[in-house]
Length: 385
Image 1 (tube, rainbow, N blue to C red):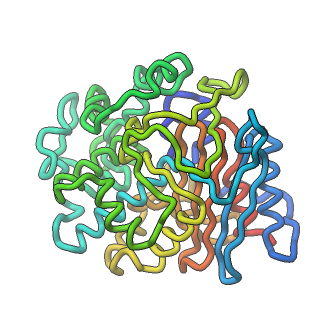
Image 2: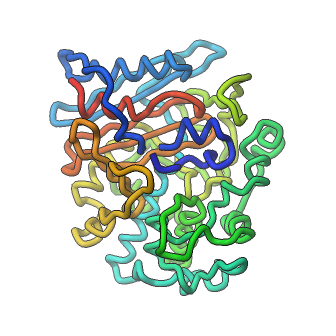
């Protein structure tokens, strides 16, 4: 999808290009191929991603005809083991939809207002260098109109955690939300609150901190209790500082560089606290389709809060995409309208998209962060066949 939803895009230029995410509105390309189950075009798009250099891809779709899954390529380049439809993978910024859902539930319960200032719940946290949490609302965090600098765009942070030498020295570091926000506070705001739009991972670190301030519990516990448990998302977790993936899972691969050439590294093991509530979650394609279908069908939010979530602001430079509250609105070239989110983290590039009625959903993952066209898979699934 074209907003920068990856945690690494701000530093590694190659990742920025590969994971810039909703470019779902790109030209449609060749006509899709029909098949008995209606998913042949999607299969071909997955194979094309592998041909472009992605080691392996996995996808699951659900519609009125049932559930369908497909894989392409390999999940482990050392052993040649294939990818599985049941693979667990890091979903990156798809985490943001879960975080926004919890905050909207809290609003529905009267425990906060989206128009509360950040400073009301996190006094003094957003301050210095022109930053002022008294002028930023919770809503502006969720729709990226706060102007707060994204900590992942800090050059020192990027060198330390996203490029090869730094990553291999620091991949197991434990970082705190307050520490991540402090990185952002070294920078002036990108713009005054409410006067522009800029994708900032700091916004959702702050959102996770607001959840704890309101409830007394971590955002991970609230997501688990309010979303994962009720929907029986058995493959979804918030790992905190756990460095490994649950089984089954493939490996994750990255160039750890500002180019798309050069060696490829296995980056499966890492401490996801560097992503925090902006992108730490692990899930499966089946769970993601279940979550977004439930969300769009009104199972997780009252009608008023779902309407707020779907109230969007323009994404600069992409007339076919708009950003709501942790939810991206995209019109595909064939005219089909989908809601969802995408996300990237080291060696993992994911996307979930759902029609407005929740009847047709897709989730997919590439185990690479430097190549592969996720949007082509989405166009194939919703526009082809």
